[in-house]
Image 1 (cartoon, rainbow, N blue to C red):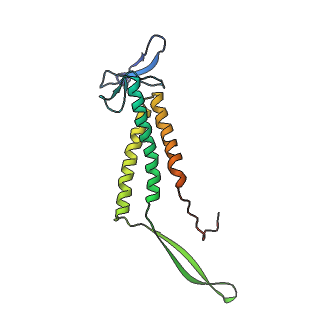
Image 2 (tube, rainbow, N blue to C red):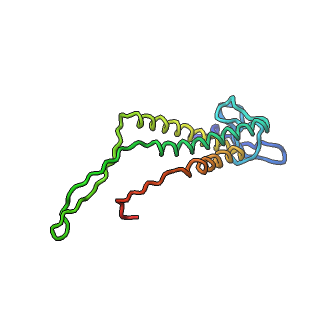
Image 3 (cartoon, rainbow, N blue to C red):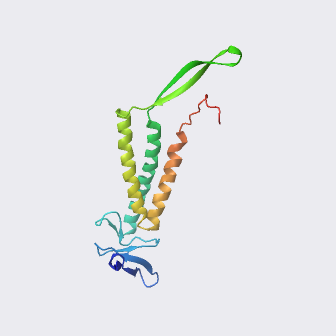
Length: 175
């Protein structure tokens, strides 16, 4: 079975820089298949959203950077919003020489039909959608956009995660 119509190879660019690309079957755009730095005819996510100037690329870079930073902030916010109910139960257990010792057990619960869980679910859906958009933006192979997709979450992590609480369980003996 011949599938050559799915990926017609050609080269786009000026005479001095040849760049491998393939012809998208539903548009007249040539899509690159190697990394490149440019701002002419960069199609982004939707067929009508095409970057053609350095100013447009700068604006899209900032928007993608902020989206990627928000993605990381959303991940950290979801961690801090996790509402769980922690209950400690103590019960007597026999110890050495007939002594009675108290043993403490920790029970962690979250209710499925609760507002915090519904909020977590909605935030998770938003996080997944943003992650797919960022993946598709990276797949444009445009170096500027790839840079925004990778540096944005790093900046978001740096800005938002330093407040991340570290829970220490004093009853845990295997550190």
